[in-house]
Length: 145
Image 1 (cartoon, rainbow, N blue to C red):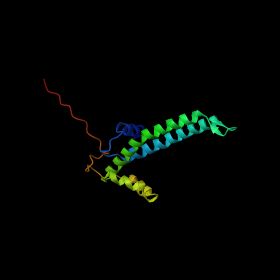
Image 2: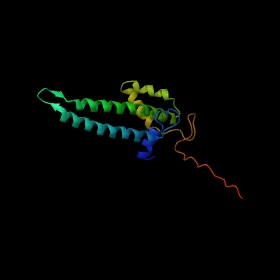
Image 3: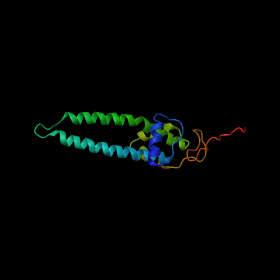
Image 4: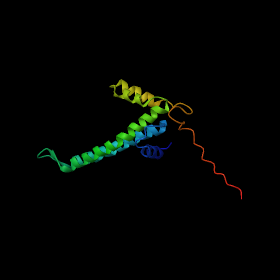
């Protein structure tokens, strides 16, 4: 699965916690989040630098507007991120509740990185068909005249 396909897939399944997600979909989504974070951080830095008043040691209103918009963007990305994390766990035939391991400081993060990096189960599992297997297109039968 390519980078654009992965991002489209996650957005098209915005709040879908059922089904399975391939490793490529999961990791390309995280690459997308890193890119968005870099762009957003750069914009915030530029706005902060241009709106800083050294005499009063305060920032202008522009920084607060941009910071509010950034907060809305990250808020909008939380749900699809959680959904793709759960679907990635489903690909390994694990419950989405394994996600709560990530709340354990340091150790939980390491465990989750390992779990997300492991391959999924081959073939269908209790969460759905294998996402690596290409779905055969529905056959169309023409009725002879």
